[in-house]
Image (cartoon, rainbow, N blue to C red; front, side):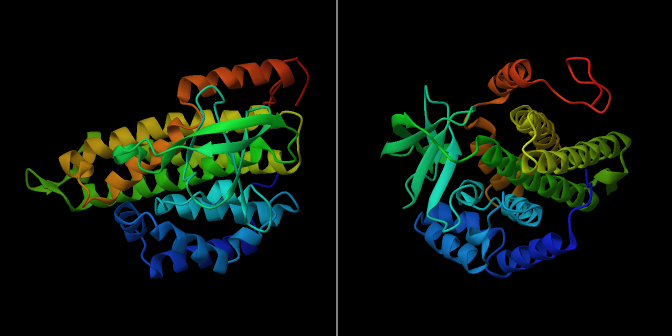
Length: 313
């Protein structure tokens, strides 16, 4: 597999990041919180960048560009279903999401999109009814939905799970950056927090966690594009690793920020809050691990040494 992302995809990432920064940066999420209709302008802005025209399964370059677009959206905690809409049709009017069909909830389901709900295996359901949002700080844009009868779907649950993990990766790397900045500037006992050995160890652990997750995310890009027979296992493995990293990185980020990390004035607060939509939907860490175990039993699991069936990978 190729471990480096293409130069064209990285250039596209920079183009998207510059556009997001110039148009508001971290303020996008605050504006949407105060005015939910603001999300419509975000959809138009992303459309102007050509993101909805991406066909990520057509070639690897477009898949990399899609993943990096989601990564940038995560860095700004962008309150818009970027991964879900990219996983839909190339005209940008469909949005695909994986749900727990026993208690289906979809973030941003109130937006005027044609929502296609999938279970982990890829079975499709049309969304028949969108109910009022759960409400509260964590559930403002989260809507319970009623699903129609199951139907054949041409969409792939692995693609949307992959792109959501890239979104979460962006959130985690932003959290690491903000935490490094905070401990470098914050003084305690006459010296920066970053001078304390325990803080340095924590920052080093955050760095190792994000770097490892990024490498796994790049491997999963390759696996999804080549439609390997372990693709469901690979994407669930990435999601499981993402959730584990998120638990650790947000915990350390909040510990080192202290009380200010929970204030609306802190960018960390918004990243942490909006990460919950990905971390809890369609299911949390324990349920993700259970789905992963079931997928491994069905299709096996490749490692650099040996698969579960005992064959060389």
